[in-house]
Length: 187
Image (cartoon, rainbow, N blue to C red; front, side, top):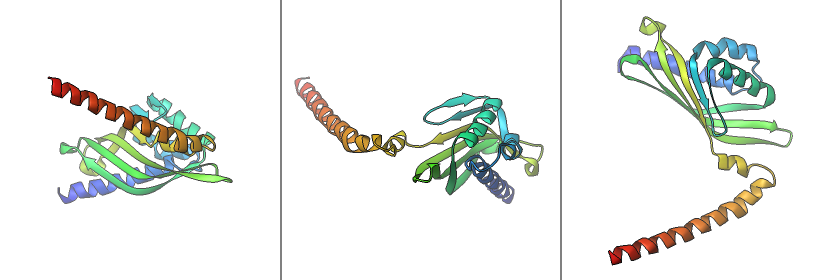
């Protein structure tokens, strides 16, 4: 990898850091989202998280603005990495961090471990002009962790459901091993 490619990766890492900071800080007004994020969003963008999926640039824009209007959170970035495809046609940015859910900050800020993936193509005539256009933005976090954090429900989930499911799974596993063992000795 040459100096030009290293410089491009550093530029892209800075771009995706800023994009994440703007998207995942709900104090940022929608005007800033439009100015700093939307120029890098493809018409065919698909957003995915464990609860929803949507496709299209306008749906993405409205969804981001809606989140900023209805929810309260920010994001602490732990790691950010950009990998490029051969030929500099595109790549993937992966961001690892904590989304700090502050909906009830007077009571509790919930730190939700989150991984973000941005799949992008690169557009521009020269390496210096290349800019990312995001086609997939995926947000990954544990639905189980989210359920465990819900007051009242979380206690039942952690202390009853998970323990009961674990015991049931181990019993089913033992039964499966016995059935397969018996079938192997017969056949």
